[in-house]
Length: 114
Length: 113
Image (cartoon, rainbow over all chains, first blue to last red; front, side, top):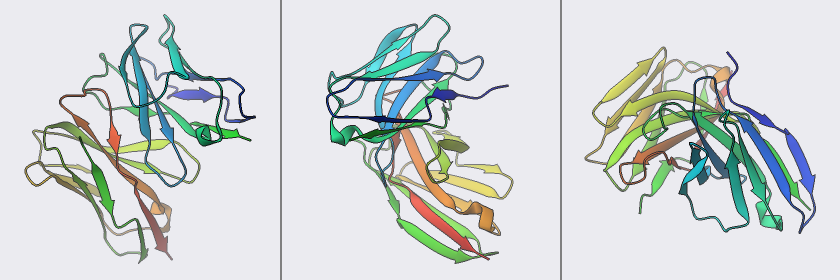
């Protein structure tokens, strides 16, 4: 049983560019959450998707957007990249609507903005 | 606003010693608390999930306790091994923000042979 998978593993972009990160949830999970983890800090919640809609959002600007597909996989898009967007981006999945269940994390995508 | 704090930020112990990691949170209206392990540059591995109605959870050498009234959780790792070296993070899910985990900054643990 594959766990949560993310692609790509690493990504290097320059300021002002746009990036798309991808996540496939664990089998049987229908909810996907995205987190940003800066070096030396705990992950910060970006948003959560359920039934192809954004259900909750953290304190991130509109440059951060997402999408969930009918097969529950998800994308995170970041526009107009800033140096401060350099971080490890983590995807987590959970079953049953994700409101109260244990979350399982993927290996992350390391984004470097130059 | 929920604040999650983990002290100390770093810890070094000799192999065989028991580890005690602390997590405190300011809002006791939580639904659950989760402990994770993170190896350098990697994703998070879930270790234990404690529901708000529970006092503790155990898995092998790991035991986590929860005291909602005082806003504290403690992760105990018995008989530490060099393979336990990692960063340990706690995260809470509050009842007014279900689905959103709020993390502490983590405790970096080094177990020396």
